[in-house]
Image (cartoon, rainbow, N blue to C red):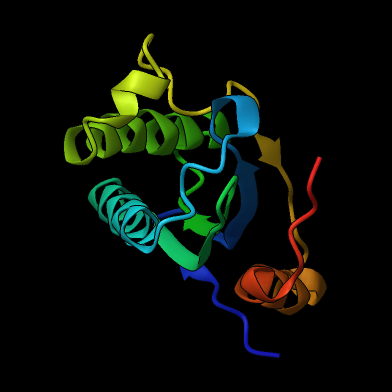
Length: 140
């Protein structure tokens, strides 16, 4: 198995994190193809600006799965805060009508699912995120 270890000045690391979060109240606001494409582009742009690499990304109608590779210098909580906060702002700029649904300006729910993956499980985790759109959506 190929390992993508990164060498720093005094360290060697591989920091890959699967993350998941959903819009507030778990509304299906990302079901339109245009919304999905915009959110994907926004998240990729933000990740690139903050020196993060997105390994896999699945924008589903009511949640987002992302596998991100990061440097250990920024903690995971701060990296996720940047992704969620900025993507919310950018998405509202592109889709101002969403402010009617989210009047207080909070697009994402405050919770996030943080996972860690070992090298053995990375391929399985990436395949899971890649194949999200093939899975049936549960109705509550």
